[in-house]
Image (cartoon, rainbow, N blue to C red; front, top):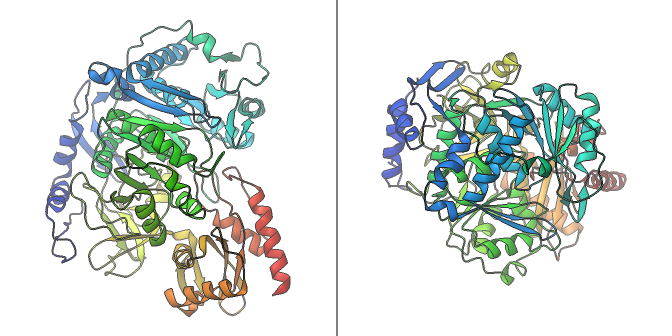
Length: 640
């Protein structure tokens, strides 16, 4: 296994505590992770910490444990049984509060329902639910009996739902009559009915009553959860799971090709997330932790369900849109529940920046102790706004880099160990046990300030087990470019102080006159303009340069599109990056095509700008955003 160390020689960061922990973790990773794993409760300890046969890593071989037990059972044996586990807020304003003892009861009863429906260890169960308490309850119930859950984002279409169900061969689909989004019920049961017309593996559909809307129940197949819960047992023994038992399958929403079913195990995944969430968020049992992601993404799995509940924290679960029915909904929730840790995406931050600070000042956000950023690189302007106006300049901002495949956070400040001086826009350093590097196309380490490919050179406990049913794709996508080294698909830079700066996906790089320029670099430069709230970059063919840059811009409240602002944005990009990055055209829009998790769908911008096929829209938040981009592009193209 490659070895390296970090040094504290930089005048920028003279602290030694973090470096001591990190270097110990790299020098003897097996001893380090064994020590971390012992912080969990195992039914049987492992025979071997790591079996590394590249590209497959098996962690804590021979050990057994149960995720449901770690998240609920061990807490009800202590004073935590009466403390809050979940604060739930529905979009219409309805609420529920679940203590750990209530959560324990509901998980056990739900597990009993699953067993009574004939589900067993090794079965795959699909969850197509809104952000309601039954979603984490169902996940923990699956884990309790050893069924592998696959959470399918509730914004997906019937076809996207069917594709994922068919890939897993799920026997049971759990859904709801509906969920709420921007004041309207989204008829999930109706969508599920359509999907099940082409999903032969599904034997039963379990339906949660959420919105009380009329639904059609197919006799012999469809059953109401509340009716079965009334007959359920109050205790189901948590089945000891082998460390390598698949806890869940989660599908990535790649830009092209069939979505990949990422398989995560039990022992390594839980150990890794228990550790990194302590290091990064200094999470405590008295913490009130709110991650705004949807549970349908990996951030929701690790950051809403498994990590905070293992730590005995209280989590906030919110069903709806961030600015509905008013733009201060999030700030109201923080104040209402006394949120101490707030974790959201840069896109959401930039969206809320558009509205200014007036709505924020209406609320008491003094409970906040730490802020987090996830999902994509955060530009320095958004970081500074977040720190100043949400954190009131007293909360560290932890910019976290990780992926569905990594299972948990890989590069981030670690305040619970020692927080370095933060650089707005930098994810700072790899966490203990993470042997990261920035390399060139040949796999050679890049010098400081030189852009390269982010790689991980040694296995970590959160590493995924593979791509479900497709081992060839696992090897080709992640391990073939640099054999034995994990290819992240992201570009990054290490600065002279060793800080990591993530530049975005390698497939989101433009080639202008032979120069490779990241879309994120251009967008960051545009957003540094005081009038710009958000920006999305695409390219169009150019007979001379190969590709030319076009940029779609959303202005902040109080600013109107003008030739002057357009010229200033172009000039700012030219000065920030260089003349080569100067946009061919700047287009003003009121919305950008984004996924429900907040990521800008740049491939759609490119498709519009090149009149190409737009392709799969299953993860799109608002289809009207495409029509606006098309309209603005076509109108202004005529002027040009």
